[in-house]
Amino acid sequence: MAVTVIGLTRASAAHVSADVAADEVVVTATRIPTPESQVASSVTIITAGEIEARQLQTLPDVLKDVPGLNVVRSGGPGGQTSVFMRGTNSDHTKVFVDGIDVNDPSSPSASFDFGLFLAQDIAKVEVLRGPQSGLYGSDAIGGVINIITKSGAGPASVVARVEGGSFDTFNQSAALGGSADGFHYTANIEHFHSGATPVTPLDLLAPGEQRIDDYYDNLTASTKLGLDVSDVFDLGLVGRYTDTHLRNTGENFATFPGTPDSTQSSDHTRQYYTRGTAHLALFDGHFEQTLGAAYSNLDSSATSPDGAPSDYSGTRLKLDWQGNVKLGSDDILVLGAEHQKDEITNPISASTAIDSGYAELQSAFAGNFFNTLSVRFDDNDRFGSKVTYRLAPAYLIGATGTKLKASVGSGFKAPTLSEMFQNFPNFDFFGNPNLRPESSVGYDFGFEQRLAGSVQFGVTYYRNNIKNLIADNAAFTSYANVGRAVADGVESFVAYQPMQTLELRADYTFTQAYDDILHEVLLRRPKHKASVTAGWRPTAKLSVSPSVLYVGSWIDGNRDFSIPRLTAGGYIVADVAANYDLTDRLSIFGRVDNLFGRRYEEPVGFLQPSRGAYAGVKAKF
Image (cartoon, rainbow, N blue to C red; front, top):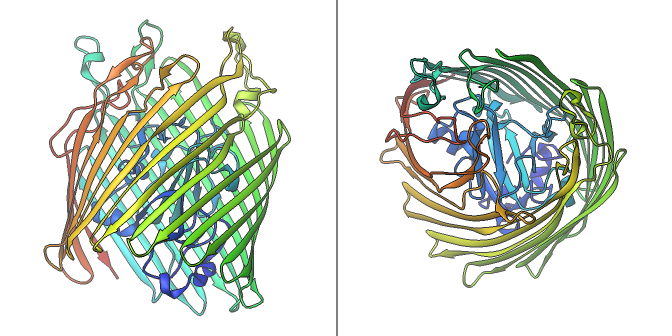
């Protein structure tokens, strides 16, 4: 079993006992590999096998069916993509890639743009819902998304993939991986191209004006290296570089209401992040420690036909240490310390430093009661200190196949450098260096039930109370901590495997998210979301993966928010993918997205792609 974890290296996974090998291992919920059956937190796991079977190309594709999440992409591939988790804001989700905090310090909201991440080198995605600042600090009010990329193992091999299809799509990827004499390696390169995606609704264009389709090109290279120096000491290094170009239709604000520009805007982004680790296990594995150092650099530039070019550039340097102490056969103490420096160099010059420490006690009692208690202290040189916590017990009833679970925890989001220091004197608007962090307290409780081994279902209720939200002040001259919000709802699922070759799953999420001061429903949080997915292997060589996603109506603004609140209609979209193995080394595949050609906008004013057909070939060497 090889697992790359937050703050740890692959060797840590070896300490998961053999009797739970069949149980999916979760890392994000506790920072150490833990069988999913013992985890109380609500977590969804998407594996590389699922990504390949459904031919998912980008991270938004991977996340769109996950319960509790609303994925909003401004148009086609490459458009700005946000995730609203359990009704919280789009900047309330913390994102890790191989232990690297990739939330962008240079963006106004310091959030992560999910639309720029390609999916071919993903080994697993863990989506952890609920306030998680007790382990992960700032930005984790809604939850945490942890992306783990593929590791090399076994004899050297090369996997190459190419596909083409609708919207002038032409994608390629290649991966080299393997291991020898304690050295583990993988190198990946991915190219995604979508040259003609209709995004602007025709009814927004002037009479006789032609729509210009969006163009998107993404080149991503990544690597993961590991060296087992000895049985107790290993080193690791990961790195990722992404270069993207997007040409899209922006908004002409010279008119009111605004209209789509007659010529396109251009966005160019460059992202680089890397992390090195050293892991040491002592006293027969009773004490493990990992030292890590990560660096990220993010640059973006945008030009539009009716405005000055804009440039954003930021860096993050993070040093971290984590130690795991086995206090007994059923108790593990996790200790950690971090130092982080965020800096913006464009469009302003500003920086902040955070020193953090955390502790977690993971315990088991009588073989069926499991509990995790964590507390964290963050000291920010701009706003001071913050203490957060999380408690998550789970109880298993073996005789009935029942799991009872609950959790309660706090979260916070620090004000961004842009909110504190960026000024717009032409609009009489100025940053506020005295902002305090947004904060929350949330809880959930529920159960999961297994029946006869082939049926599993569960229901979880959740609630999150958020205060000190940062918004415009009453005079619209600066930011202030003036907002409050409440989000609650229910997540439920049913999974059924009627035969070995067929798996079915249905998820339903009900979400209520509203402004607790204005008593208004928050934007872009649909109340109802449901999905049905299936995996069918009629023969040993053929697999078929259909899926249906339903999203109910929601409140949104129009494209330029000249209409600040309107009701957007819901939609149903169906996809189907098929893979066929010609030989052990060669396979062909094809898929149809939006099978029934449903026309829908999410967000309002941005068309999502209509029916698209794609086909390709994959070879292993």
